[in-house]
Length: 253
Image 1 (spheres, rainbow, N blue to C red):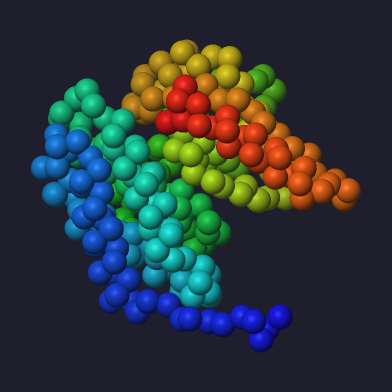
Image 2: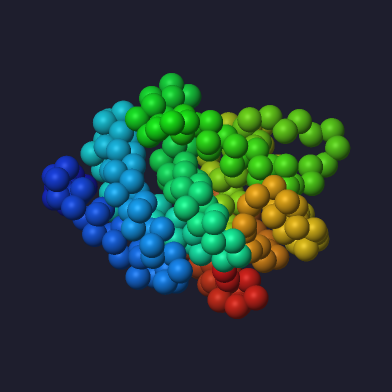
């Protein structure tokens, strides 16, 4: 198959940086006018930090194709959605925008790295307070909002899984959660399902009590168990069913 594969290269660092700046500028038009003044104060920082994260992953994961402008688009989509959740307190716009940026960068870049790489990226993104500490605060606030079944230890792996899955679900961001057996992948999904399906109103209240301004909606689980005999048509049929269900306005954020 090699003769059918062609590398078209990638953007230069300068070109990519210019694209990122322009993509950040476009976010302003998608936000309500009440956010514009505060967004102008933060937009250079947004561009700089996303550019830094892009370069870091490309260098440390040793693959030029490991990140692209699609990652930038995904990060800005999450940032935009989170920012729009702040509609009550004018004085909280700038802090919430900064927090939204930390969450978006954490989801799209930080959690893809190992422990040592995370520390290095945190150093490059940190200002007055270290980035990893700020992100850890967001993870802890979210996890305090979940009702965790008795006998389950809320360890770091479970907390990160809950955080990544929850943010991906509420922003309709596709995600592939990979990990060894026993790393709480299925458990984290069940906890989110139970909290958003059966205790939605209580969960939303706990989110606000913990300083997370998310407007959550109940979720409906549609699973598909593949086997060696699974046909492509069966997967597509289930996928189409899920996509039709996702267009329901009561579900889609």
